Image (cartoon, rainbow, N blue to C red):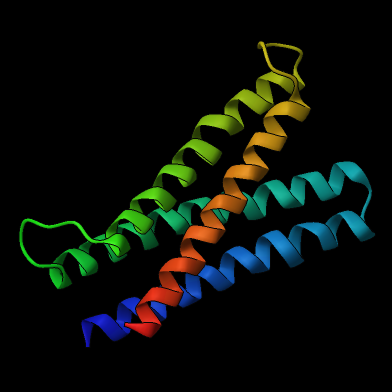
Amino acid sequence: MLKRAATCLAGLWCGMLLGVGVVGAPAGFAVAPLEIAGRSAARMFAIEAHASLAIAVVLLLALRRLTPKGSIDTNLLLVLGSLFFTITGYFVLQPLMAAARAGEGVLSFGALHGLSAAFFALKAVLVLALAWRLTSA
């Protein structure tokens, strides 16, 4: 039962990431002025980051119970990697992006945005791999 719930949660997490990154944010930029689309995308990514934190914690707890005591399996590593990319990609890089937009900091907004997008894509790949592994095991 716990494994089935973890599998469902990983699949929903993957769907949320794809919905925000592949559908929601690009659609906003396709139909709205740049400033409005940017604010809309920022709000979607903020909601996604907080949801990803909560989902990652729940999955860590569930998978830890399913893993033999004292061992770390690939599924746990996938969740930990996703958690790393969430924290670094949103909670570290977003304040730096705001500072770069204000003309402060070492890196440009474009460089930080590219790094943030890469971290988001890597997180999506890890979550997709997690969902795939949980359904096939």
